[in-house]
Length: 112
Length: 466
Image (cartoon, rainbow over all chains, first blue to last red; front, side, top):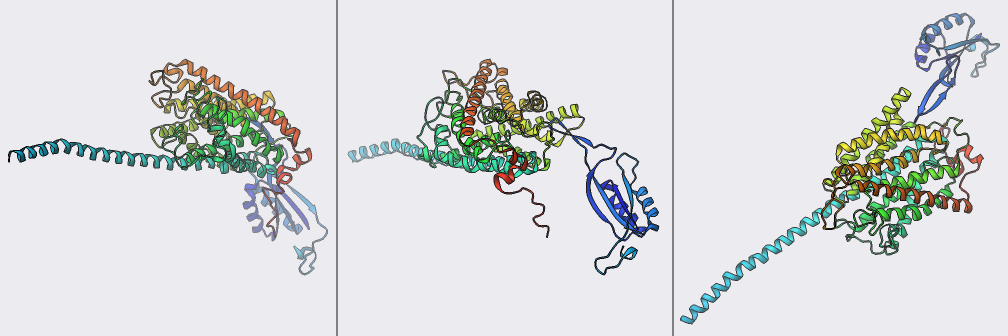
């Protein structure tokens, strides 16, 4: 099993979600987060005074999936979340040891 | 028969003489009756208008200023900031009933009124003819009260996010008595030093309170900001407004309420009120454009906060001039004020390094001062023949109409307002500082005034989570 964490632009959430469901991803956790990579934020002006906002609103998806789905999921996210501009986001993959369904104590891929 | 004929002739003669007199007496009665009805109708119309205006001016403080200022602070101080405006509605009203109205509009010296109307003694539904022949004195009293409420509320913008609520309340009580009351009496009270309508020594044109309301509050705000010192972290930590949306709604309510503020100052529902209404609206619009354009040039974008701040600056600047200028000069006054106040807030404030949290001075002090001076330039007697010569003929008002002396009088009014505001505010701050202390502790300031001063939060996100 692999945990996929994708940080994407908020405006791309719906498209990414639909693409993932289409390739067979059953469940996901969506978080509203703030951060920046190379984008380094933006500047705001209030009554002539400049403020640098370096933590920008982003969406983070967390999905644990069977290993055979990972490549397709990565491809789906890259295609749908890409605008080509700086700040499109990143995908992180981590190996997962175990998953447990609380309702019936199922283990492993069956619990996903 | 001959005698009867003579009597008949005499009776006929008498009838011919008396009949027109009777008819005349009947006409006179009818005319008097008509005049009374016209007077009653005028009085009713004026009364209705000024009661509506009173509500409009209160609208400026209650939702208007409270939302405008509330949106500009950080979210941990939103309630405390709004509460400061609301508290003025309660505290100043009681103070006004007890002594404030009397000190402003009771007979007294050139500098302050007396005690004849303490506890509103003698303030009933009959007009006080010194100020209005058509309004019940209670209407005049309650209308003026709304000005007395918003003036100290404007100052709260300077010390937002760091002053104790208790200190604020005491400061405002003393300020209303020792700064607002003398200034209001000098400009508007009978026998006041600067009163242009009732024979003051230096007749200053201040239609709706540019000097009384905006200069005194704005300059006092600057003194407060200087005396209290900067907020912790200012100017290194970013302190952007937590909700420009709230400020936007507040500013629009201020714009609407300002029609009551300025057009109501005609104290009647006639053409002068219309003229002031139009001037007010025009100045607000052009000032919004002036501030927005200045920002657009400097920052590349016209911001929403800039637009609404500009509108308020224009409303401030047109306040003293509203009942004296034509529509085109009103547009010009607004445009000048919009650019000038932007410069004061964006450049001068940073240069002088004072922390006027919400720019009470930059908008009200600066806008009020430029407005008072421009009133002396653009005022015309065709709009409001207020000044008269020794023979009772109306004379030119502003510089462009041929009365350069008026500009000097305006300057005298401005200087007196600045001096009174600086000296009075400094003394009051010192007293309050010694009695209860002005500033919250550093710990409370970091925690926010909502929790530490009122035990509440403006936004309790977790309150209804389950």
